[in-house]
Image (cartoon, rainbow, N blue to C red):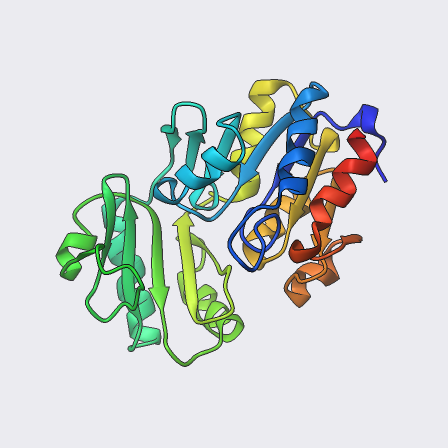
Length: 263
């Protein structure tokens, strides 16, 4: 394990990694995260979540530090709860992506995480009835931090493989769930690319980064960081790719590692 003196930044995914199955972050994990900054190291939350889902996280973790949101497309200041950097998919690329994907998987339903809010086609299923339903033209009207493509029956790994085959280098495609939902970012944008840029600003090297994750959208981050851990409940591809494993999110696996490193 990397020694504490070598770790200058801890980067952790949220859902399925530090957030438990009951959608909470345990007091133990909050305390462990606070020890990171108390030691003088940086703490960065790296998530597929959009900023509109980050208020409760900011509250739970004490409004400190930065979050990389939307799989790297947005940098969000947890103190002010404002987006400070963005790297969206431009509208012409959004149009091409939807055309390619719908030609390959006709039953896909699309949604766009725009900087001004979330808009989805009527066929796109969501549990939040307050979100804006729009026609395809509305999804294409503004750049998007993330394009989402949903299929009701195809499993996520199969859907991901089919999408990557047609998207090519036009965008980054991944998934972070156990059902057919693709998360698509601008070309070259990932959790790793955003963290690398932030670390360059902070004067932190990849070898000084400790990272945690659980799903395929975490793989670039886990590959880039000097030391990476997968939680026990992680996707099989993540467990296979990462040398270090810890206990599950429900067993405070991230906290276990941080307590050993930071006391």
